[in-house]
Length: 153
Image (cartoon, rainbow, N blue to C red; front, side, top):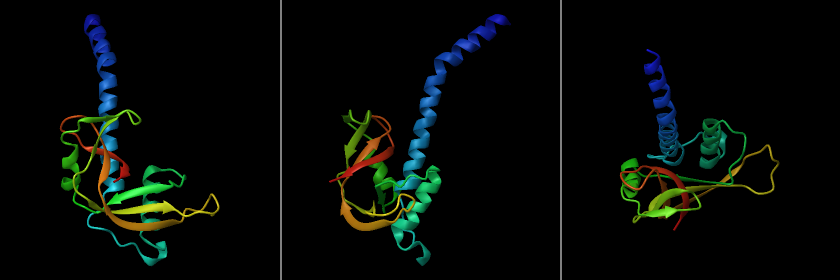
């Protein structure tokens, strides 16, 4: 019995980092889908004073953070259309320590930028709607999922 307990403890020590990493990656994929994909595009009530103010209130609530991000990208396209670009990710972005790719297609994107000259407790955003290609962070090299947007092209 004691031998089984030791074996179980060793197995937990060996597998735990893998399980934790896997769970963190699943959360990153879910967060990408929840925070960066809005298709079809939602219309926020007038009280939010624009799309980005409504969206960023949701983003900050979801992230449970009072910090106002300076920039946030939202893609208005079906998940499958974005996801396919991470299926084969040959590039490794050392700055992010993740695989990355540039999409071949342009997507409709809203860029939410934090307005300048406002008190630190206020988060007022400006919206820019554009069509551009995305630099995506991917969860791995093969059969991956998007986990972040690092820029536009």
